[in-house]
Length: 353
Image (cartoon, rainbow, N blue to C red; front, side):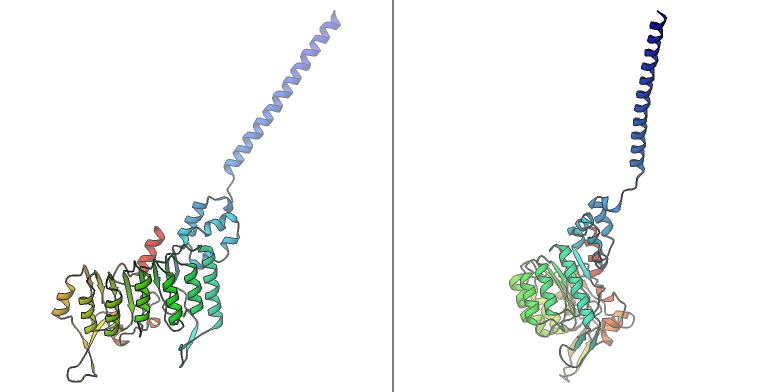
């Protein structure tokens, strides 16, 4: 009887011990799980694990040169973020200038090979990442683009709506005409003045049905005005800022562009020929009543002819209507009193959209 009671006590003891072991084991698992969850909650996520939308917002703060510097090679997630269309809506190369020397023969500049190769590399990397989503393309005024570089860019950015072109030196007629034929959606063009405008303006008229805004950086002659009226009679906005403008050319534009709404001639000076000396140019210091009356129909007529007090007016006159932008502040050439033609303003707004 005693041995039976001892056996029962031993069984109870063993059962309690097993239950205790099980409870301790469960407690251990629970504690481990709690610790794992606490660790997960405290663990800092790695960069490659960030959501694409967050990465894109961060990358929006970077310049084109930073975006193509190798970020896309970090991992698949970063490459996906680097290819997001919002990053490439505007391709801004306005801070990139060619390393060149002037020469006496066409194209009147010699561009250093390393400078040329660097531009080609940047264009190729940018085009690969942008995926044809660029809508605004901005070149520096003194970036001497070649025909091949322009054609390559045009073919990979067919949906451009706004283009700011550099100096013409290395761009030939065939190159710019081919680019214009590709840019069917082009609405706005900023360009240096051109001696023979018909071929270019004719291509724009034929291929760019939504074209409405033009900015000329350089002299504005009667021939240019007449061609403009013939080819682009529905132009809405025209900027001739910091240019030498023939008075007759200005009158032609005011009479011949009935759809014109905005005209900017700030810091420009009007030129006319002397009645007594036909070959002698005379700078007109004030706008006369005829010009003001014709311009009264415009929504905005922007002027500044303060040659005694305005620095930009003085620079235009000193440079005889062909402003040497390389002599002045880095971003001065981007400024425009017309909001539509202001390059810096356009960059700010496009990045925020």
